[in-house]
Length: 575
Image (cartoon, rainbow, N blue to C red; front, side, top):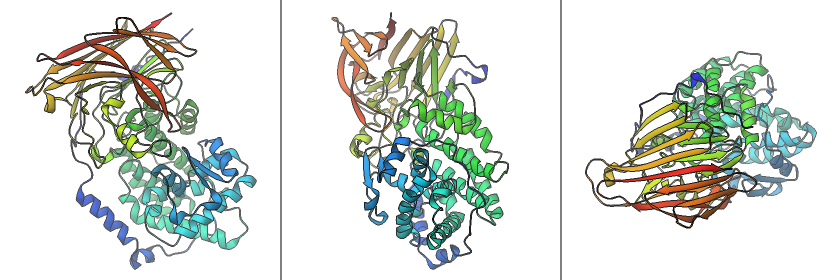
């Protein structure tokens, strides 16, 4: 028997909400880019080198326990001498940090030393230490004395300090006193670098990482009390801007929220290692973040693929939730973060009901307003393509960029134009500036009506979407409307796309107004539409490892006459 997801009165369902994109069209300004470049140039100056000098510690005051479990498969490959990251592989014996090449994700994975978590999960200290020291020696040789480039970026130094201290037994087990001194001296120099650079870290999670690492240095390197106080003030400021009031994250990416929760959990472990009370701002943030994260999970316990993220699996999400020490129900309405959750029976529907993220935080951000995803128990039915933030061996850069488009999401698109422009430099331009939402919880189920203005400027049309999920989860009814708004400029075509999960097999009905959706080993669903033509097209879905998988999509297409257009559709569980 399927259990209904309990309704929590603290969810605070709010009606008549309007969400506005404050910084409409502006990304990082030219002056900001110049300031960043100048700051990096100062790293090479004699003055900055003098600031990095000082006493280095003979030992750490404590070594925190990393509360987050890593990937054992990746760790096992490390034990066999292979670094693996989403399809990219490098033999450790061939690793040279001076000429390191690969995707941005691989490079940051190596420079941050996040791989230490995977290694420690798969091996004992005795097994893992030689591998960790071999990679560490290569990094020290290339970057310990050369203060420049990505290796010394503030957010990466913040993560590096957190991982080095948490996994100190793996990198400081050697009896080679010269090697040990080099590690500890570089750690101290990195902390002094962050004293000046943390406040200039990239906006968003970059600042959280930088300040968190600096606090860890203050806690775990002798004589760090003044540094700790300075860094705690910085992290408090960052948390107030990076996290929304309802626990989401400003860039609106659920997979980035997972990373942020893991960072704060690791920082809290540093406090616990010293038997100190954590910064007061940390616990309330985690208490809000976990319900927000669970609010964008499916029936299989994994993430929805919003804002270019990956559908991280249930084990990964459970590990991060466990590390946070927070127990909570999924948040049904994240008003500021912008996601709505409908749940009935075993069915879960999540909706992107907000404008795209601010342009300065929009790396990998998507034009996905009013798209939805849907699952029935452990089976995903309707999805977003996802993966736009995770280019790599499986996902070329051009394809990753294409997956940011409105057409890569399960929503309506007008004239093949994105609801929010995606500019050549990767930033987000004009489009959705305002989203209006009305949500009702009734005896028969949950209902959302939302609209966005992304097509008003170009086509004089407002997109309004209505979704209603029955209380038993066996029926989702929808209606997509294009309503005249402002000056009408064309008679465009439109398409409503329903991207299907790879396990879903689709068969059109004889009248081409419906389809049967069969899930291998799962339920049968019926789709019907009225007001436009239905076809089936190819699609793809990026899985949790960043690998594109072939799938299909239902496409309901037509034209919008002078008075607008309306298409009603239905998803109904059979049997």
